[in-house]
Length: 99
Length: 99
Length: 99
Image 1 (cartoon, rainbow over the protein chains, first blue to last red):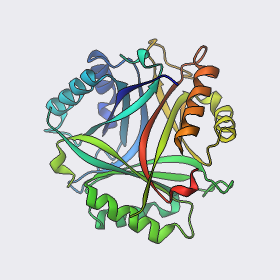
Image 2 (image 1 turned 60 degrees about the horizontal axis):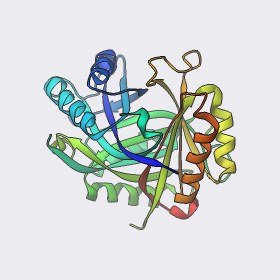
Image 3 (image 1 turned 30 degrees about the vertical axis):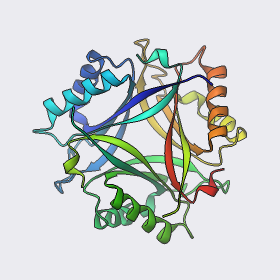
Image 4 (image 1 turned 90 degrees about the horizontal axis):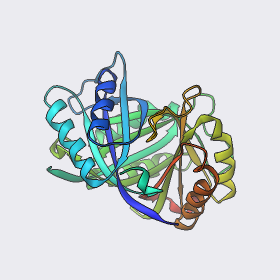
């Protein structure tokens, strides 16, 4: 089995930000993504975006694109929005599709 | 990009346990969480909690809180409930929010 | 806390494939799984299976079963379907349930 080590970037944010986030990560180099409707509560003790719920955006990318996405999310959203962003390592089949 | 290595704890359980689990992981030190409605089938060949479905609870925490949560879940639920619990490593932006 | 290192296999595919995938991964050795309704867009720029949405299938298995599942998914679906498959490491409580 020929596997490629790539990065799984996960972003959890208010659903109102979804289309912005998807546009932005695509421009930053993501070639695909998965979105899931989720609920969340953050460290400030208030439910974030309760009216429309939250969205989890996941994308498998190379290390450089992962860094770019996290940097962008931090710079753009962290001051005013309850956004969570993290990265982990995954081993992917057909890795050339993602980079 | 300044990233912190933390633990992502994932618990999948019957939805009837959701509010208990969220209270408990908060008391054990989790400062936020994400919940997702999921379906699951366990190793006993029966669908767990089919009436209300299952819930996936995810929380990013430090290593000590992760251990505490897993220990609590094992001690409290494993004998009578079809609960799955695991931990993985993630790299988080703005890690000081989580510990 | 006695933890076992296992593999978390994640497959994202059109929802029409869900029952096939679940049957197949069970035959290949998975003893349980979680499914989530998700949305996705792949690297070809077309939304995959938009009519019925996509499904994310997750299963915690040993390394050998993980390889078998990824190989099967690659051989069976990659030519004609927009399927994403990857594996990561997780540490599991009560690992003997999964292998």
